Length: 98
Image (cartoon, rainbow, N blue to C red; front, side):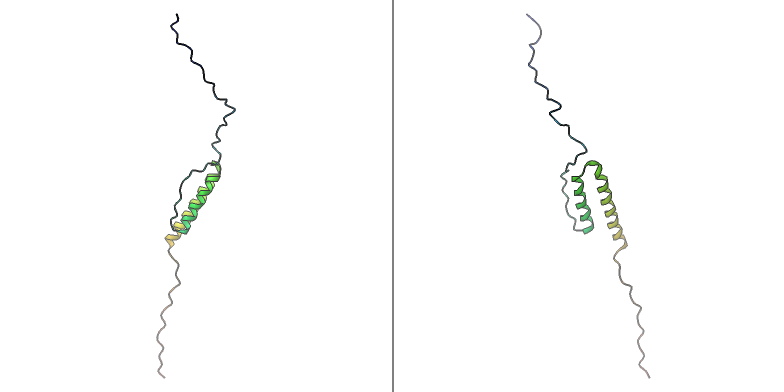
């Protein structure tokens, strides 16, 4: 009689060549929902972010920098306020005396 446990049948290990390793740099949509804000400049930036879903990871930085630049420009435009035409100086009344 033996004190050892009976040997369990071994399950075959998967063939490493049959299962491709995921490519971390391959495009992979994040599935992030972008909700429009109602401000054209901001919404354009949000739509531009969608481009990152179709790029490899090393292409994301270009999209992020482009969106950042656009948002910065939009905020700067808010700081300057609307441009208005200069108010003309009042015209003195005409003296009709002869």
